[in-house]
Length: 85
Image 1 (tube, rainbow, N blue to C red):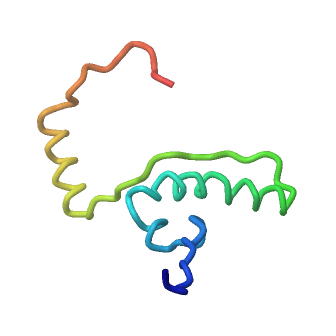
Image 2: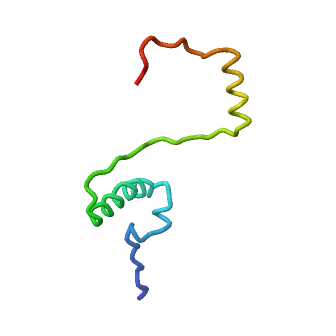
Image 3: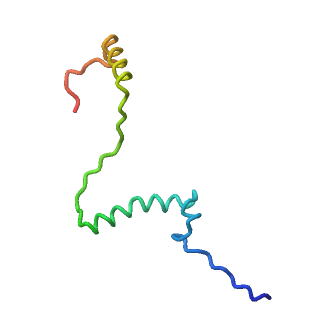
């Protein structure tokens, strides 16, 4: 038997290769939820409004071409009698 010291495994939260791996994804997702909550508590923020989604702005030329096309062909869907909210 040798006197070699067995190296202990790093703690999961200190194991950068694990955290960056596909198996660590669940922890990364959880931290994306947990960290902001911690920050809100620290800053005493109680109420928030969250908007999901994104906006895409087309180039002026692209938008102008599309507008010309819509004006020439009309809307794809007939107008409704009631405005949609």
